Amino acid sequence: MPKPITDLIHHPYKPPANFAAPQPGVYKASTVFFADVAAMRARDWKTKAGYTYGLHGTPTTFTLEERLATLEGGTECLLAPSGLAAIALVAFAFLKTGDEVLLPDNAYGPNKALCNGELANFGITHRLYDPMNPADLAAKLSERTRLVWLEAAGSVTMEFPDLPALVAACRARGVLTALDNTWGAGLAFAPFDFNGSGQGVDISIQALTKYPSGGGDVLMGSVITRDERLHRALKLSHMRIGFGSAVGDVEALLRSLPSIALRYEAHDRSARELALWLADRAEIAQVLHPALEGSPGHANWLRLCGATDLAAGLFSVVFDARYSAAQVDRFCDGLKLFRLGYSWGGPISLVVPYDIGLMRDPGVSHWPHKGTLVRFSIGLEDAEDLRADLEQALAAL
Ligand SMILES: *Cc1c(COP(=O)(O)O)cnc(C)c1O
Image (tube, rainbow, N blue to C red; front, side, top):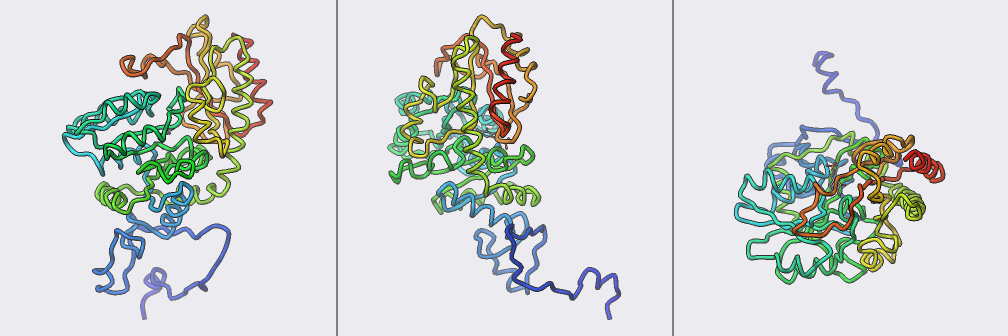
């Protein structure tokens, strides 16, 4: 007879099978058991046919991956520990010494930092292109270009590019395209099938940290493809780097994912209301929101997202040049409901002032504004209350 301490660990009790409830079961594992040595040797960690080690997938991570792939219209998905890790995974999987990667001038800043840091150290070069000029991208594609990053809308300055034209330029040269689809979230447009054309990007990454989580409390990323060969390369790098995802975070995402469309629409509705209101204010020189007429790339947004009529709850404003950066800082400090903080997609509205002069390369794309830019992420508060908060902070200017 085993001692109680052993029975405590190898307990004979098995709960009845076929438990069913709204949320899928949560499986935690580093170690995964095999029935026998033959099963251990036969198991292939590269597919979802079975389990080998927690790092390579559990029923819980597989379930989230499958749901995310469906949301974006892809067939394969890998989880990464953050949105930025998802970006890095694409670089690890497809770039080698001597290759060049192209980024839009308004790319997510940390992607540029990765290019300037680790990728440069590995002998991989990068160049910036003007996202609003497909001819500029086409002219910069060379024998060495291996990967082109795309973003719609662009980070912070929110220009909406002609995504199908940018992708077509890459496809004509056989260059891999990767979209940072955090803004669209798989809801505003179909990244692998623009307007039902069958044309789209090769790879879509998302910061699940934003709308898929919706809580402001989880860091995770996804890398989705429709191509088994690309997925294989990504999976190999994923395994060799050792990108795991904490099961509590995977559970949180499975819990919030069913409400993503409702939340996205609510964020969108309030954001447009507030963006329109700000556009009429004398303090504001320009509102940058792709769904608003007069915003850069509005026609591109209309063509790609007109069918869904959706946009993220995110926009920026440029203050009139008569306001100093210090005054705009005080405006941000004066907001009571809007909190100062990075990231977006959570329930609480956020504000960040940016110095665009430090973020853009004047040799690549022209930034026409003189005033200070402030980005708002609209949360789930009542839009009237948010408007009143903006109004009192503007009045204090
Ligand atoms: C937030 C964000 C990321 C990175 O996500 P993290 O989970 O914070 O690493 C990448 N791209 C865009 C556009 C983002 O907004």
